Image (cartoon, rainbow, N blue to C red; front, side, top):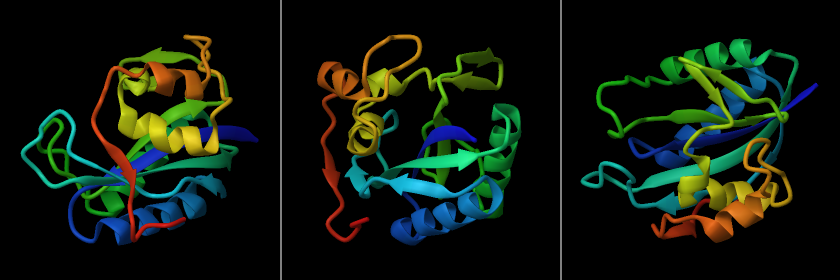
Length: 164
C-alpha cells in the first residue's frame, strides 16, 4: 500500500462540513484515511481579499498509482462542486497531494512532492502534527525542520470548533 499525505481545505460554504465530506469521499474512493490533523484556520494566502480557510492534513493508504490518485481527487473535488475559476480564489474544496511515499514526480499536471510545500505555513503546521519526522525526498529535511525554516509568517491556528 502507498502512503499519501494530503492537504484538504476550503473557504466557502460550511467549511467544516466540506472537510468532513472530503474525508468521507476520499476514504470511499482512494483508500482509508488512517490519520488526520486537527482542523486549522488561516487567513487567505495569495489572494487575501477573501474569507479565511480551514485546512487539514491527512494520511491515507491507497493501492492507486499517483496518476490514478490525482484523477480520483479531481473527481472528488468536482463531485463536491469545485469550480476552478480564479487562481488562488475562493474554493469550496481543494485537495492537494503533498507526498506520495517518497516519490518524486515532475510532470506538467502532477508535481510530487508539492512544489510550494516548504513555503506555506498553512500546509506545514497541520502536516507537522501528523508527520513531523517525515523527510522531504528532495530537500532531505523533516517536516518539522521545514516548518522551523518556513519563510511564510501567516498565522495558522487550530480551529476552535474543529477538533479532530
